[in-house]
Image 1 (cartoon, one colour):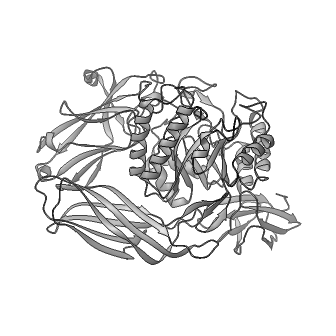
Image 2 (cartoon, rainbow, N blue to C red):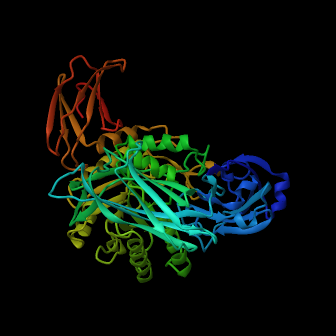
Image 3 (cartoon, rainbow, N blue to C red):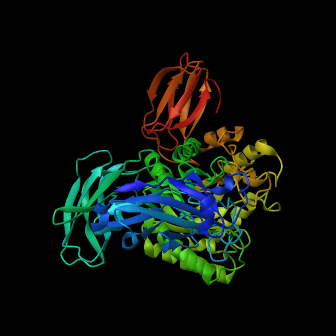
Length: 634
């Protein structure tokens, strides 16, 4: 059983006595968007009443925190029972069972600390987003039998034959499931079934026995071949559900569901392949927590609002500077956005990583991968961003972190994001990652550098490697020109990147103007960087539509009412399968829907628009890929 704990009493102060004058809040919650607390760093306290019936005595009761920024200590009835330190964006679970008072009301209290820290990542003030303290993600009470399921790791790998894109076929499937069994647990049995998402019809099923359970045990279902599954693709995000039921003598102790997708992403030389197809992908980065109405405690509707805006920039590839909530990754799974999720180690402070940074990064990598490894949207783990990657000590950290990510999850890329690559392309730790991810700010943050000159040198220094500009754009007011200049830079950079076959993808920075404690504009919770193609609340600027057009997988040209839709063959570059075109009148009413034939890069499809005033192209899963007036060249 899961019970969401939304209603808490909150107060700031050094001791829990401050809760005597506390007030009611709803979790997720951050105090740094509230009047008078916008820049408060220190201790804050949350308290919640738990009604614990006598019937729970025979089981286990735990509490799972989606995230507490950045350190937390958990108390039950005044007694310290657990905590989580120096990792404000990864989930953690605390056991409550031994200290509960059954048949009574219990008091759960949490002290949260958002002071800048040398032990945490992000480090001190060296990061470019908001320092929002609080229980910033959902909190759940977990009630199970004496044994409960823990980390579940699924293998879901297409078995590809031949060349070219595959949408369905054979796949390898297997999993491991950890179990925490309290003393007195019997002969545990794990029943499982794999079903298409939304269906109860099993493609495969089975049962595993643990005749001699110990406190920590693990069930393993060896990989087997499934003869036919649908593969996950950003245009066809087919998902499956693994259902697990842990029993003891027929009694259900715990249940869990894991949603997965069968997807393969790899590189060969400088080329990126998705399910067998050579692709060049475009995307945009979104900075969560940017809206001062919500901060980092964004509710689900706000998360979905911003993700929809992100998707309709034709974003099929993004990165997150810090670990996200499962709800964000669930949405990317369902709607088709490939993700690199990163440890929040950002900037050149400290000058070189120390043991404290390695300890925090190692712990966060383990927690991040354990929590999110089953999301098909995730293709890469990031170990750092804009460190001084040409110092020997920093290079050593990056190599160790990349190696650990590969050890924990050998099915995904592990990368480092560099902004020092242009200094010496042969001596930068970006090369220790699987993709060469470059924050490319020639002409702005690097005013004396020219994009073609620097890319020519870097690509020549790293032959046969896939390159991915992972940030580019205009940051106001550090640089002038407004949104018109932002759009101009975006077009200029895309034109340059298209000239380099080694560039396998791009990530524009960024979707939104965002809150940050180092922002050059605004005060308090409105302190921000003006870096986005939308306002802080998601209102699109003119550059938003330019990003949508440039990142569309097609271009449209007109000869009167006759249209020619060409599947791009440069950047982005991938097949268009299952797309449709809507014909709309001047009032936006639908006149007709045309099925666009499957197009390979370079193919052209011609159609008649008739009396339509506007056309809209839709992806197979319904997202808008572009819209323009008839007779408007584009």
